[in-house]
Amino acid sequence: MDVLQTVKQQSVEFLDIRALGTGKGSVLAQHIKQSFKIGEITPEQALEIGVKTAERLLDNNYQYIVSTHIDKAHIHNHIIFNNIDFVNFRSFEYQKNRGGKVWEKLRNINDDLCRENNLSVIENPKNKGKCYYEWQQDYLGTSWKSKLRYIIDETIMQCTNFDEFLTLIKSKKVECVYTPNNVVKIKFRLEGQERFSRGRTLGWFYDEPQIRKRIEQYQFLKKGISGKTYKTNIIDTNKFQASKGLLHWAELQNMKEASRLINFLTTHNISNQEDIENSSTQKYNERMMLVSQLNKKQRQIDEIGDVIKLINTYEKYKAVHTGLQNSKNPSRYKKENITALHMKCSPFVRQ
Image 1 (cartoon, rainbow, N blue to C red):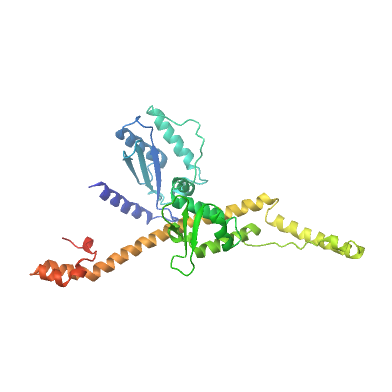
Image 2 (image 1 turned 120 degrees about the horizontal axis):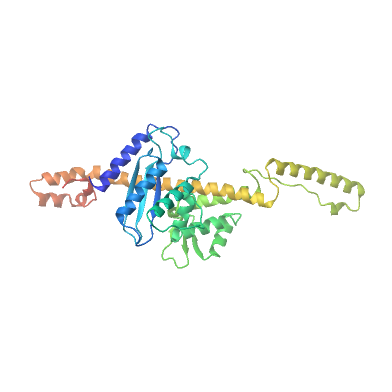
């Protein structure tokens, strides 16, 4: 059985266990990458350490695969394990990662195994663990698309409407072409980038309609909590200095308004401007996590759409290709069906 068949078989077994679980969540499997210093280890040793890492972390309660790669200068392992255990049929997050601190245990296991095998260990590492989304953004940080996404996200938080967005993003050395009457409504190009990147290719959340909605939604976040706004009605008492009666009235109204404002801030646990900004940032970060999920779903939809097109082409022209195989006069048959025979349905046809 080759590697691909092994992985496919293991995937089926993962799904069989997953089907028995409850509270499975959206995570199908967990992925660990374990790297070693260049020149210190052989592939056989790396594989052995990878297996021991999985055993110690998972307590032999989860299905796992360890794959040792030598395609880069540093030998490294990929450890993939089922998110559902085969003892209680509960998720890894529920069983092992409550509080999100399992990375600390994983790091300690890795370091212990490296010390046991006289391998290098990073002592007092500067960086702490990070969620997959943060890692993914760092990993993609060198690409044009990633840089464009970052600048677009930043610009959305700095403008109040779409026209201001178009003006502001151009000041950040991003060429932005907005053509509302075209199929491709908006596209971007960084200084030094050879080709434009369409908004939709950056992700569903970067197309023109969604940029408009994001600007509007972020304005709500900046103005208040959970979409609520608070408008103060403080009266300028300087207007009533000439009349003691009106001045007294204005001061009373301002006291009432100040009391309302204090109640609003207390209800939402806001004590200063920083609290408002932190709340806005938190909501925006939560939204960006959803963006990542939406982009992933969009890619899956696009891939399924491509498969559907291929299947439709296959069904349409399969009979023609079969006719060629059964034809008594192949040359004549090819001439009569040359257009259909050049359609790309051959991957589905056994030769």
